[in-house]
Amino acid sequence: MGRHSCCVKQKLRKGLWSPEEDEKLSNYITKFGVGSWSSVPKLAGLQRCGKSCRLRWINYLRPDLKRGMFSPDEEDRIISLHQVLGNRWAQIAAQLPGRTDNEIKNFWNSSLKKKLIKQGIDPNTHKLLSEDQVKDEENCTNKTSMLQIPSAGLMDQPFHLTNSRSFNSEVNGQLTEASKDEFVSKQVFDLLYIHEFQANVNPNGYNSEILAQYQQNMRPNDHRQSEFNRNPNYGFCSETSITKLEHGQITETDFASSSTSRMSSSNSSNVRRYQNTAEIQMPRMLENSEDLTWEVENKIESLFQYPYISIKNEELKSSPRQ
DNA sequence: AAGTGTCGCAACCGCACCACC
DNA sequence: TGGTGGTGCGGTTGCGACACT
Image 1 (cartoon, rainbow, N blue to C red):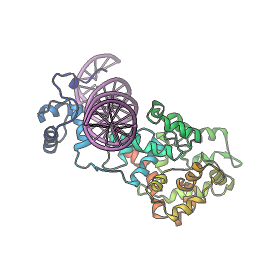
Image 2 (cartoon, rainbow, N blue to C red; image 1 turned 135 degrees about the vertical axis):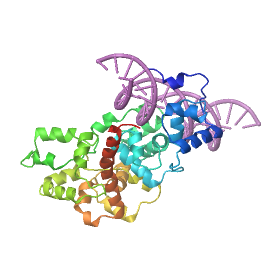
Image 3 (cartoon, rainbow, N blue to C red; image 1 turned 90 degrees about the horizontal axis):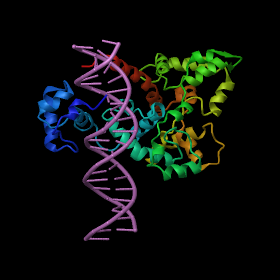
Image 4 (cartoon, chains in turn yellow, cyan, blue; image 1 turned 135 degrees about the horizontal axis):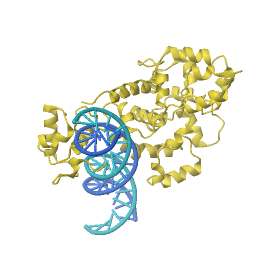
């Protein structure tokens, strides 16, 4: 697959767009919409390739774009979604109205990554870094080591979704080898599993069926609950509240509720900060669902909405293009 | 004031996927 | 079934603005 034909043509402008070019493109798209991007430059009177026009429209000229700084909530969402999706910027952008994949990618690389490292969190794996690692990561923030795809990290990173089926395949309260394999392999990046999970999710947010399943399948086994409490590889956890700390928005409630979190024995300051501000534990939230604050409910919702919306996106993707 | 380094953003590049012929 | 064109995505680069020496 070579270069696009539209890019091979001679006399095509490259580089920054002039206001005149923006106006031409914007006027054309506003009047006629996007038919075929390859024909847009010719019809709009631009010396650009269609691909460049498409990018300019999507990343800059689109009227529904939200310009300006990212809000703390948006930062939270980006971090949460990145933990689940890795560098799938387009999917992350789909969850943030008015933001583009390019914008989010740049924001991640220029700002959020450093912020996480400062908080002692590996931005690739979303796991805690040792103090030595923090120094190393800070030293080479702009080097290629930081640009590695996070798949390796995701494979062993502590974000698992599960449903009753996994827990039904247990013997004497222990997961069988087969169910363990399933449990370990069926992580959230497994789209099929997301779809399975989605089937139980009310797109409006928090879902009572999940709570019921949780109570039915997990509550009777206190040892497993303690496993959730003890083992960061189970359940939901997120460092997203770090951004709230950064923005000075951490509340007394936040601190009080999270400071009772499970990991309370480390001496590391980074770990302690992470514990106190960062973790949202799904089992705890479900258990105390009636006491959920608005903020926590939103966090659940944001985590639950993704699978639902991803379905929508997959459906859109699979439908014929215009 | 001039040179150098750093950072953030816009845009490009290459690849993969899909639809159509 | 293979070739071709269109589109979308993630990684990378280039450049301007700003800070620092």
